[in-house]
Length: 302
Image (tube, rainbow, N blue to C red; front, side, top):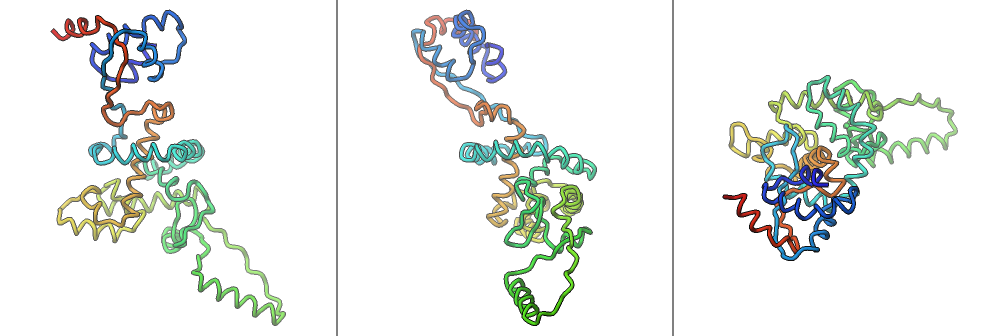
């Protein structure tokens, strides 16, 4: 029990002595007792005094996203609280797709964190079609599909669809026998083909944006031109996402923040799923601490 608590929280030696005193009797009574925070505090109520401890943050950012934790922590914590069910559902679905995507991204020398775009773009739905006409797992537009050599079925605007439907209706009235055109497969709905194309696209954006991961993610959402314009507006020689954020569309800002969030939560998923993920120092009241705890703390701090 004590070992599990040691792994969960990083606090001072004196506080761990305190926890040992609190839990000694519990260990004797039940060697297999649950060691969650709630039960630990409940066990402490058997003593005589009260006090507070500070639980230190234990969230760990992926290496490629480290450096701006303070800019993202509040957003991640709020998202993790408000959309917990979505995160759990997405994590479970990702097990089927992320390993394959990671292997393809690795072949193109791209960060494996980019696999999260699959969840953000289509929620792993190969048949997804956006209002803008993006199709498939990676939500690839017609012109991008053409550029990267994918077979695709051109997406029509509402006006074009009505025109096509009218033409078909007119032909039906004339009773003219028309040969049915051969069906064209859309490679954007094929996981492997679309993922290879998305990886090539992202590799090109990497070259355009000096390998800056978050700017690459932003460009995937709003286009490289909008990112370049935002970079110019900063007046800086080498701006990053946090510099250009305010100049990007609101949708793109949220898109990049969600990208960061999913990567951080999935990198800390065991702690998240067990409700043990701590984002900021948290003050916890402990009821009825042992009477001699102050003496133990004083002696240790001398």
